[in-house]
Length: 285
Ligand code: SF4
Image (cartoon, rainbow, N blue to C red):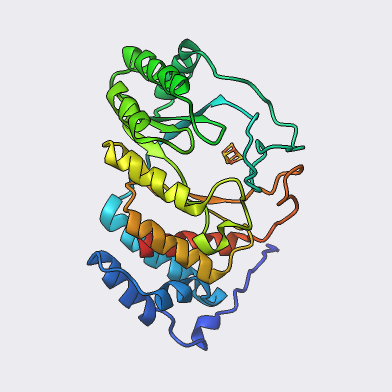
């Protein structure tokens, strides 16, 4: 006698109200490049569990229309780690961090170029050159310019994104002249929430740096970290600020609450929450 196992899934959709109408309107607006409203963005974040697959499908329709099924691989090299004087509460490299991260000063251009070579061999089209700290000195910018040159000597086609913190206009121009393609500087969270995650620089400082980078011809890359105690309204607020900035790339990060940082143990996120956040940004921007 054959013994089998039957999995019975309860079909709640048979009794639940049809959830897709409000999403259709959002998708139509997104596909027409019309901004969705704050109310619609909040509805995505607060959607019922039974609507989650429809929310994901709505975001996927917009994604496919603009980007097809393409995935781009970016490779990050941390050129300088730890030793930061700023107090961003999510960051294991912040001042007085007890996270025990590796700390080192600038990697040499040749070491970074080796890393970039490995990235290219793995299929990466962009290398992100990151350094801890509030912002670079002019000498640091010179060093990064030399590093960009060393990478392009080997891989002239490699897109290079630089992430060095707060940036001055001349520094941005120097990076662009050296061959940097993009500059990353995340807004991270809403202006109204910023003071509770960092006191050593302001939300306005961050906005200014994104403008400065764009003004020098660098492709602006700016996004968020979700899960830092922000409300739904604050997530929508930062999404709105990003739409005003019009970055070319928007990284949506999720907090890893490292031990040794003020946000340690703050696990607010669930997989479903992360999907809703991703969908909201996809539909909003
Ligand atoms: S400025 Fe950068 S490296 Fe320094 S604490 Fe903030 S996020 Fe971390």
